[in-house]
Length: 316
Image (tube, rainbow, N blue to C red; front, side, top):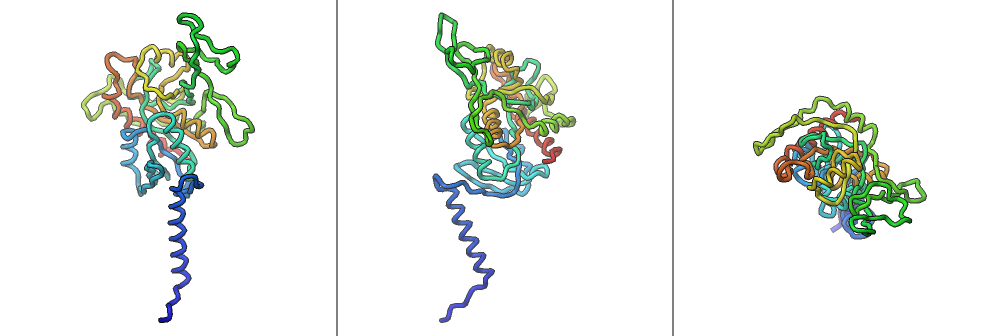
């Protein structure tokens, strides 16, 4: 039997399918060059754990799932914006690692983070949403030796110890590299994108909830606070004395366990970022037990609502 020749169009389709299969295989081979999973210019929308992302995922249109290294990415549109949503995982290493992962595998033009945080500014209340102007890593520290009972001292050669200590803990700047810089630099603060921050300042009509599905309600009407500082570290803080130290030392509104890590990765890659954080608890400053278990969902949804309003107003 004489074989029937295939059309050029059919051959091209077969070759394209083979190429895609090969690329998909390369994407999962350890040590291989990362392969873009999507070429659409998108906003990366990050949350640390599921309750923070639930409302946002429910609003995504034309959703499509991708999985890399066990991380599920959802592409689609949100408030008319092309987005890729995912969970970074809780804590600094997860946030840094998976922020870089989304930058490597998708065409990301900007980053937004939405989630909950512990409040350290005594002027703020649970349910409030903060959009900090800058973020720092407050647990990048020297653990100093005790020079005398109750007195700690940094080595004299350690010139980057400038901030007040908390016992043996002396905060230090982090070393960071960036394209175009021949040498690494040391810095504590990573600034949010000024244009994104300005759009957030213009959000006036976001209706924030003060009651949750558990029937528990807040005593104050939540507010949106744009500006000020946020700090992040690999610890859940539920300590009144440390809360007071964090406010006094860093003039922080909130503290969390991820944002500053994402901010550093964004800085190193030259990608603008902005973070929305709603107070789920007072980091040890409230009466009775920690409030997160009661108001986590209210705070997570309030942060998501402000993020949705931001996306509707943002013009990349």
